[in-house]
Amino acid sequence: MKNSLILLSFIFIFSLNSSAQDKFSTKQGTVFFEANVPSFEPVEAKHENVSAILKNDGTFAALALVTGFRFKIALMEEHFNENFAESATYPKITFKGKIKDFEASKLTEEITEFTIIGTFSMHGKEKEVKLPVKVYKKNGIVYVSSQFSLKPEDFDIKIPSVVSKKIAEEIDVTVNLQLNKM
Image (cartoon, rainbow, N blue to C red; front, side, top):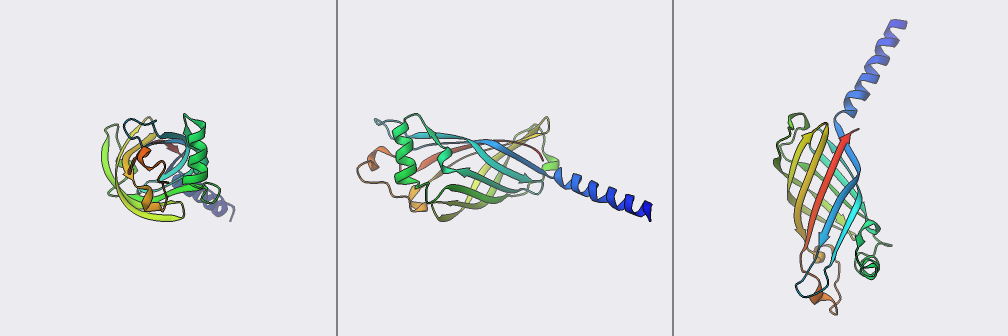
């Protein structure tokens, strides 16, 4: 009986340990966006505390608090949070998806290009997307990066006419993540 309990305990601990090795995560990912228009003040912000998790099978999820975006100009940041993103009402941006044909165990130091298919949730709206993503693994860390564009109108974000000429119609987004084993 005692040996059975020890064996069961070992199997339980081993299964927890092996499932933990199938996940990678970060709480310090970066997202940079820019909506620049020539001849006007740059409209750009950076977020350095994005949380993300990646499972061995390519299942992926990320979360960014809207108030975490930092602008060079404090007034721009205030307008972004109060008037555009309405961060008091819609405090977070999420992405849930899956990297197509992905297996973490097959990653190398060579950058591999994949497609991730998923759903952005922002400003109370959801949008299905298909995005390019580059992934590689070095020293046990999985690096994930992507560049893509989004339109504020897809998330019912209204740009007042008084500033609409100063903000690009498409927002260019760059994501960089360094995910460690959980």
